[in-house]
Each structure stands twice: as C-alpha cells, then as structure tokens.
Image 1 (cartoon, one colour):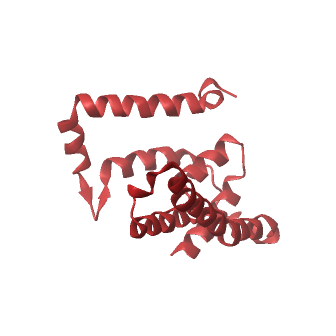
Image 2: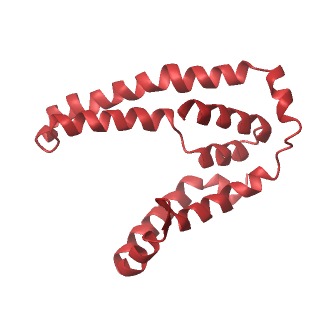
Amino acid sequence: MGIFEKYLTFWVGLSIAGGVILGNWFPEFFETIAAIEFANVNLIVAIFIWIMIYPMMVQIDFTSVKEIGNKPKGLILTIIVNWLIKPFTMAALGILFFEVIYEILGFDRLIDDTKSTEYIAGMILLGVAPCTAMVFVWSQLTKGDPNYTLVQVSINDLIMI
C-alpha cells in the first residue's frame, strides 16, 4: 500500500481541517465557488468527482459487464444489505440518537420532534444511498473488480431512482 492509501484517514482529516481554515480565511472566494451551479449541482464539485472516478471508469471492460449475471451472489448480498438491513439499522441509530441519547443528555430542547423525525428520515436515506463515487474509490483501494462494482452501483442507483 502506498503512503496515500496507508494514511487515508489522516489525509481526509487534514483535507477537512484545511478546508475549514481556508473557508474562514477566504469566505468570499468560497462563496463565489459555491455559487457556480448548473441545475442545482455545484460544477466545481461535479468536476472534482469526475476527476476522482474517471481513472477507475477507464479500467472497466464494458463487454464483460454482461457476464456478471453468471455470479449473482454479490449482487443479491448488496441488495439485501442496502435495502433490507441498512434502512432499519439507520432508523434504529436515528431513534437511538435523536430520541434517546439526546433526551438523556438534555439536547432534546435543541431539536423539536418534527426536526428529529426529519433527521431520522435523512439518516435512513443516507444509509441506503451511499456516495457512488466513493464506492468506486473504496473498490479500487481494496483492488476490487471494477466491472462488478459498476454493476452493483448501477443496480443500487436504479433502485434508488
């Protein structure tokens, strides 16, 4: 593993800290960047996501994608985990935090019941809709099969739609 992959958590944390610091030092610049949108999508973010996933996409042999149906176990497992386990797990975590722990710690006065319910719904959606670009990144970091990853992500995205 290279230095980037080995210390990925450190690099992510460093990037977050750098973004917060730069955002506080140059707020006007980042407000200008945030305003560059097309169809409610930030173009800068879209470009960087494309730069992130493009190298992985060129490794895909699209002619072999049709053969993935011959080994459906991974696809079935992905669908079961994403759509039968994760929504209930995220709902349980949401209820635990927003209705139990927040009340115990006295934070329930900060979030009313309506907002609490909306946050729980958001957690459920976040659980079933993982960031597609990151799925490709994690697959590449673990030396996964890019063709299989493409099919899994595509099926999950179709179910989400």
